[in-house]
Every structure is written in structure tokens, then in C-alpha cells.
Length: 372
Ligand SMILES: [Mn+2]
Image 1 (cartoon, protein in one colour):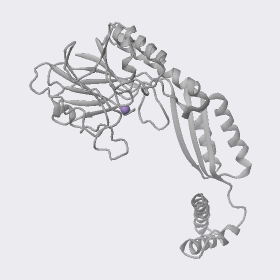
Image 2 (image 1 turned 30 degrees about the horizontal axis):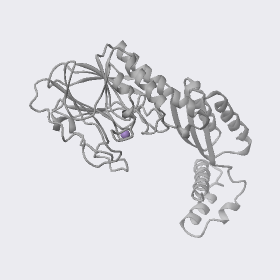
Image 3 (image 1 turned 90 degrees about the vertical axis):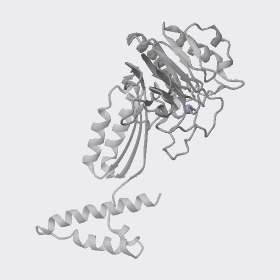
């Protein structure tokens, strides 16, 4: 059995977080969806699984719904598409559009009835609500089957204690249900969960196109091969994403850190498809401010999007008057002691005085930081 696993296209996403590049970000999601279909052709995968959240919500422009349907129909591949928590099967949903009834290659998974697919059986677990705390795959029981059995579901894993506990599943869900592979959507980064001693694998393909800053490993699809019932699936990650979202945080402690930041930002590959969010904190002398401004300007003009936050970057103290402002206590006595040691002249005290000087600056920086 061979197939392609994708999810979380989130077509119709506003992408307001991308500011003036929101349209560009929305366009990339459609372009990458076409790329997913191309990968299926190239890799000769007989079918594709789309594991939920194909659409952002029920209100998505119906023209977009038609466009996505055409993309899914465009290849000669069979497509099995699952409603997720963003696009659940419910009154008023995108799935009521007549286009879904007119497609020859696309099967909308509307209930938990197992379906014969090329090489085995597919067990669907479609969602019919936006929120829910129940495990969506408890209804699947493939244990007594002799064919290769795969499942498709949407939700989070229950071992993360976060706000994101939509339809939580245990990480043993594939094994519990007797599945060789469980294709999941919802999390945007690729994650393959194998269990030692068992062949059932659970995997998130992640979104086909990165969505925002901070995603660990998004912009992929998974090509899955399963040789036989009970054999460990072989999984290949294939890049389909176009845009790169870089989130960088640096603390400057001197001119060399600024130089290093410049080198790092200049080395970002493919600037035209790169979105950057850069937080700069620490200390920088006023005479290097123009150098920093030049670095930021270059990024702003060359990258698709560049956002800088230097609100926590301060000028180093001009004199010792800041020491007077430290309230009495351990910080005050420590700073006074450090100040005393900065004046030592002869070696090896010279080395200690250098360390004391840096420690004082670090204390200054921390005090500034705590004032925000
Ligand atoms: Mn979701």
C-alpha cells in the first residue's frame, strides 16, 4: 500500500498576522496544495488522505471551496477527505456545497464506515463539532482484520497539557485500534509517533504550507508505504511548503554580537519567500545604532516581511549614577563590590577587573529588562 498523507490546508485563513503580506500568504496555501497533488503524481501514490481542516471555517468563500475541489480533482489520484474541527460536518458547513457531489476522484468521509482503498481498508473518524474532549478513534476496531488497515482522524494528543486539547487521542491510538497507520491532522508540524515493539504508527503530516512564526517543522507531506499487514510503515517526509517563517531572538552585549546578527540575517536563504520576526534585546552603544538601522533596512527591503522589535535594546550606562538608584540589599552591595573590582590594574587582577566590568553591565541590562 502506498499513499500520501496531508492535512491542515486551512484554505480561507485570513493570515492577518502577516500584515501587508496576508494575500501572499493565502496564495501560497493554494499553490502548495497544487504542489501536494504534483507530489502524488510524481511519487505514483494511488491515493491521498487529507486529515481535516482543509478549510479555515464554515464561512469560507464558496469560490475558494470550488477552487480547492478542482485542485483535489485535478490529479488522477483518489482523494479521501476528512472533516476536521475547523471544518466539521455540520449544518451550514463547506461540505454542503454541491461541488462535492460532482467530483469523480474525491470521497468526502462522512461517517465511520470502513472503506476499501487500494491495498487495504481505510477507517475514517470524521468530526461533527468544533470542540470536543472525546477521543475520536475509540469507534475504530480493526484488530480482527487481515488486510492492511489505516485510519484517518483529527485532534490533539492527550499527553500535552495545553489549551489545545481538541479531541485528544492517546499516542497508542493506532495500536489500540489495530491499525497499521493512523493519519492525523490538527498539529501543524510533522510528528511521527512509533511505539517500540509494535508496528502501528500514528503520524501528523503537519500543514502543507507553514502558517505562522514558531512552527517547528511544517510545510511537509508524508509518503507512506506499508508492505504487509503488521509490517512497520515506511514514512518519507517530502517538503511542499514555499514560505519560511523565521523567529529570531538575540541579546546583544557588544559590537561583535551586532556583527554576528548582521551575518546571520544576510545568510537567510531565499529572501523573497522569507518572513522574519526579530527581537533584539541587550545593550548597544549609540555609535553602533546606525549600523543596526542599516541591517534592519536591508532586511525590510529584501525579505518578504521583516518585523523588528528593539524596544528592549538599551544604551550602556554613561557613568556610575545608575548604581545609586539600586535599592539597598544584595544587588546594591554586589554592584558596589563589582564596581570596586573594575579598578584593579595589575595582572592577574586585570583579568578579574574585566570580568567585573562585564558583570556590572550584565546587572545593568537585567535591571533595565526588569523595568519593562
Ligand atoms: Mn484542527
